Length: 133
Image (cartoon, rainbow, N blue to C red; front, side):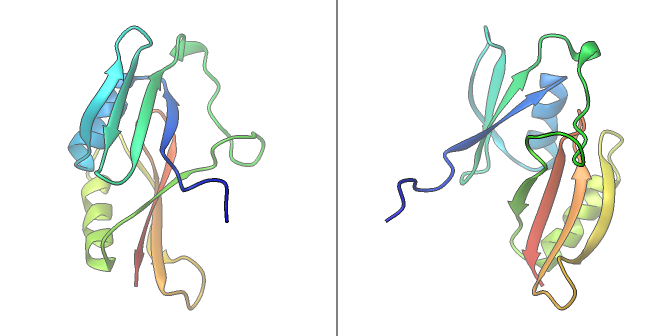
C-alpha cells in the first residue's frame, strides 16, 4: 500500500496574483475557495483539484522557468472531459491576450488515445490540458 493518497493541492508561485486568479476563475471556471491575504495567496479549485497561487515578492526580479535547464515544475496537467471540450478550451484560450499557446490539440504520442495541448498562463507557467481522443 502506498504511503500517499494522491495530490491534495499544488502551489504555484506567480508574478501577478490577480492575473493568475482571473485565469483560473474566468478562463477555466475554478472557484476561489480561500487564501491568506497577508501571505498573499489565493486558493482556487475546480471541485477536484485545488491550487494555491502565491504572489512572489519581487516580480520584476524573477527569473522565468526554463524547462530545459531548471529543476521544478515542468508543467501542470489538467484533465478535460473529452476531445470536444479540449478543442473548445483550446479555441477559448487562444482568444485570450494573457495566454500563449504552445501547440494545438494533438495526440500525446503517435497512435495515443489521449489528446493534449499546452499553453502558458499569465506569468508563464505551462499548463497542459488532456482528454481521451
